Length: 263
Image 1 (tube, rainbow, N blue to C red):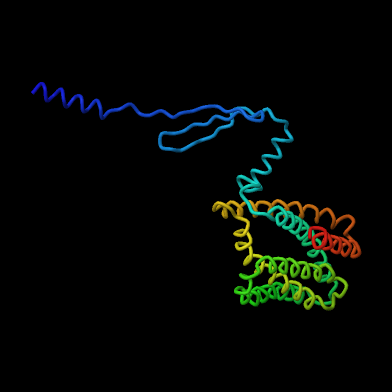
Image 2: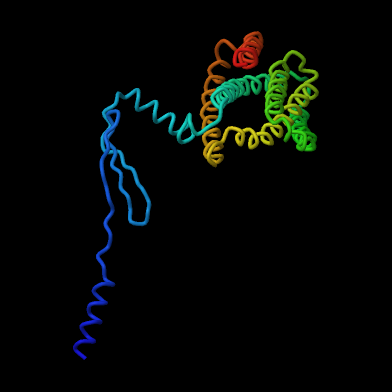
């Protein structure tokens, strides 16, 4: 019995092995100290210990980390930066123009010699035209799969056309519903085309299965430049673009830059 008990005790001691401890080490590169820790389950964690780089360099890396995919530029295909620049400028100028176009629409609606109720109905019908544009463009979805980039550019052109009509609506206040409705119709088609082509375009830039990362960072850049554009539009609406001439000049200048300079 004593021999059997000893054998059981030895087996129990062999089964109760001490837990494995994580392996950690520190690497220093380009004035950055990072601590790496390899867990027994195979997971690797990285923690920054010290960063003595200049503030400007750290700020730039933080910007790239928040608005560009992990591993950029090696994690994306050629042309991603050019497309990102185009989208950023497009969102910035479109957001600024949206402020100016809204100001113009309100001014044009106020110039119409109709009761307030009729003006409200016209405004609702104007918004309804955008939904009509969305319905019509949604029937063209199958055609967008073959040439998504061309349809994306067409979407921007339609949106610019619609915004331009809204900006110039005070020139013909008696045609407010027709002009504003056509502008919103074009913008509705643009919204559908832009959304439908977003995934195929990002798929062409993705590497190593990082499509979700590209999509998320693209939305972050769009949000950033939309906010900057809205702020710029509010400033312009009360300064150099308070007149009709200023609005038209800004519209033409921004569209020229987006169309000819980036391409």
